[in-house]
Length: 282
Image 1 (spheres, rainbow, N blue to C red):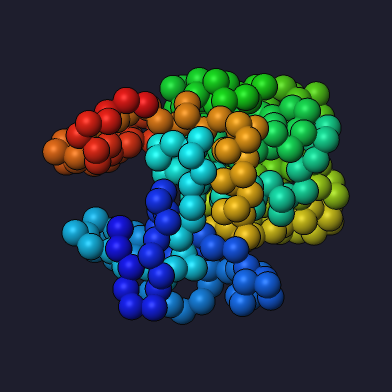
Image 2 (image 1 turned 60 degrees about the vertical axis):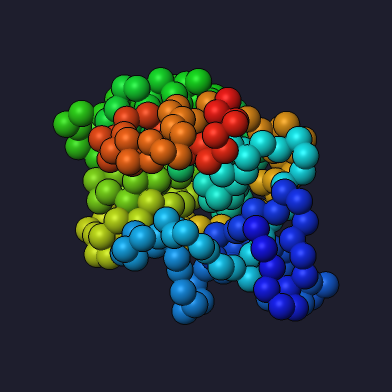
């Protein structure tokens, strides 16, 4: 890592943040207090960009760097971004002591929401997914109940969620962006409860909006994270949160193509490239 003119030398352990989301915000830091990722600036990791961050060189502003404490590993550092999404989602959802939470989707983002919801005091978390292996991983990171979805209607999924919880959840965190899952999230959420949309799918979807309206279900969106990188780093440093189970595959850099193919096949959860040939341990 190097620094350009006027940027100052990077401290040991500095890692580039995602876009403008890593650094602290607020008047004391000379940055807008509510960090959003909606500004029109360039986004290097968006799926519609050809190479994302797979470049020989990558440039970022100093304020977009996060500094890892000595007791936070580089693998944990690589998971700060999804962890930040989970923190922002659970804060927007209002997860608190005793909450009953339904997480739709058991991919990496669904799993970090399980981890964060339990850390924030959720009494019970139920997770749905198509994949039995990913639901097993959800149990491993703290889910109390899992439901493998097959061909059920959204109403049937909602009924199963209510059945395993013994009541309708106050909070639903939808992490797939799939139309049927959003519909199930509305039907499942208790009247007066909150549905947070984390997964992004098609721009236009059909949802039972009248059902949500007459039952006063609050539907809230999130986009990435908001002032949560420092929180995520602090939680990892204090060992209040364990994200290590999310890493299911590790590859040395020379096997990068195999790592991408593993991800493409949908195997595992998080596939990690280990760039240091002298350190291939977890």
